[in-house]
Image (tube, rainbow, N blue to C red; front, side):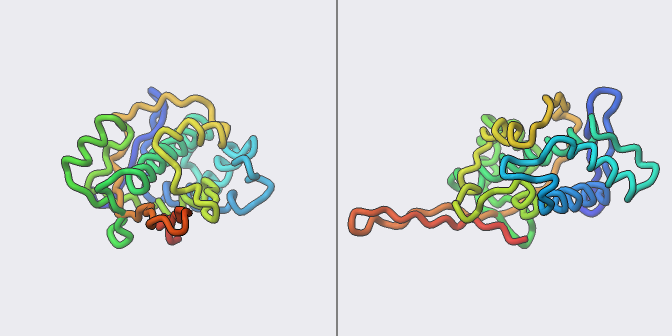
Length: 208
């Protein structure tokens, strides 16, 4: 499916919602705005009520869209969060994976991707599929890039991110999720020890 016409289904049961690409982009933009606003974003993550505020923002931008904080926006946010976590683990912690800023996709051998998915089911849908929001999600989740925290974000940290944003438990059906695209990334590399000290250079940097 063409990334420009991509839509995705997110929600619970009969409340599943088909998201248009422009709605996805609007949600990302709104999250970026909230991330830069101390009223809604603190050191620990987004503050209480941010989902309801996103509902107002999106319904103002798209009158009649009927997007609800729960389950629609909450589920879509969790979907972005899960994909961001697995892509971060692929490109920062897993040998054989790289991120391509040009195509916005993960670059790796098909067998390596299949093997990764066996232990990381949420990585499904990323093979040869663009994931254009990676740079923006890096900002939205408030990763302290100066301290190299982004390079330490594994797929298993999905639970930690859930705590940070204070999301309610979500029961989204992965089968209803879109086959989102992914891109090529940079890896954390270690330089040889010098004078007894091991200097670590992290190449993980998402350009926004």
